[in-house]
Length: 194
Image 1 (cartoon, helix red, strand yellow):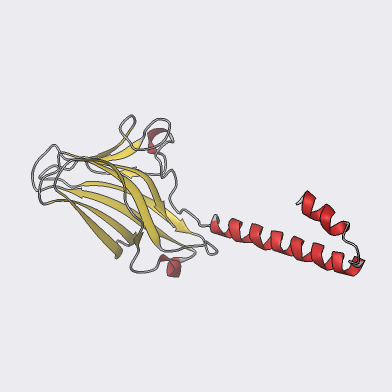
Image 2: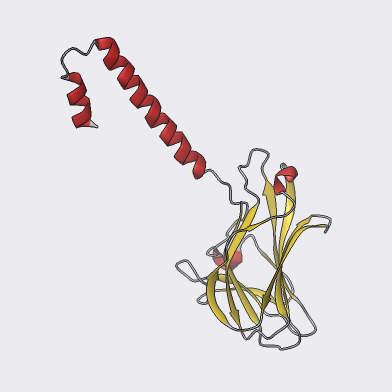
């Protein structure tokens, strides 16, 4: 920029008005680029402690057959994650209440990392967005039939846009289901709803 600036200043036959217009255009271009990049990063992740790095999984509700765990997750300094370990008689459930700000920038997407151990055919992970009264707004089923390492699941569209719930609370629910084998483990990390 400095070389270009000094070059423009030293041009013969260029009027001061032309230089002023040039500097105005450069300043305007810089402002537009900055606004564009800040808008790209302004997407709001509605999930608190999505990487589970805060001690004891603060922000998450570990219900039946679920827990906060360190050392086995996919990301972060402590490799923390949410662990679901369903049994044949009991589903594993963990959830979080999300507040959707009235002015949140949302794309209605969800993504997370998933690590699976000891899965058998018929085992599945349900990911739901619910109203606080329990009505299902969106559900995604991930069928697992084998063990696989940490996988960054591609962002999935939330069928019923969450934007219409601005200014309200919704519930994000992960439910592990098994066909009966008791060694199934789902480890969930780096959760984003945006």
